[in-house]
Image (cartoon, rainbow, N blue to C red):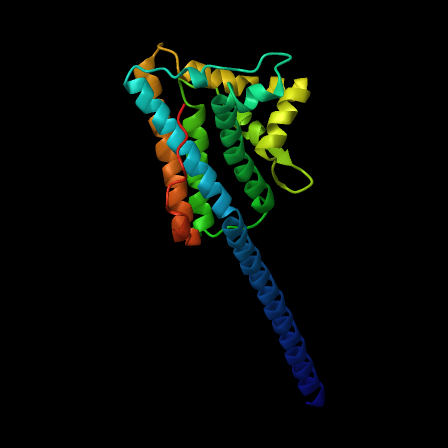
Length: 246
């Protein structure tokens, strides 16, 4: 009888130990998953303000270009690209609008790149704002690379990668971008396609399709801004950034 009690007692202890171990593992796994999911949300809030601002400025510029095309007015300011040996002041004078538009596009891509890099391995719940934001980002990338665009999805992503200041982990400044364009032939050659993209958009060929294309991108950027406003509560940024017209 004593042997049976000892066996029963040992079994109870073993069962309790297993249950305790399982609860500990389960609690650690759940807590870790929740912590990492919250970290993804925190990262989104960290990048929200600069991405909201740059998306808003790019949206305004694309809507303005679409308006110009609707009026059959093709602005010369976006029909320029830097030539070999171009002086630095070209980027801040004659070529300013085209250069700054390419730079803003690259900034939007850069913030997306940095955020994606930071959270790509973190788990998401299906109902998280992070998931909805990723969906809007994919819509922006799809709109930019859709026909009749000559700016492809991976190239748009590469613009952001090329603009990243690895030391400070943020986009390089406009001044640094201009100087790098003037000094680094390979860097300038990489961004040349973005200048041709603007030139192509401002041509007469397929004008109505290009207008619809520009407005689709602008709408996608607007949706991304709305997703950031909803998830990160940034009402202080809801005023439109200043417009710059060619």
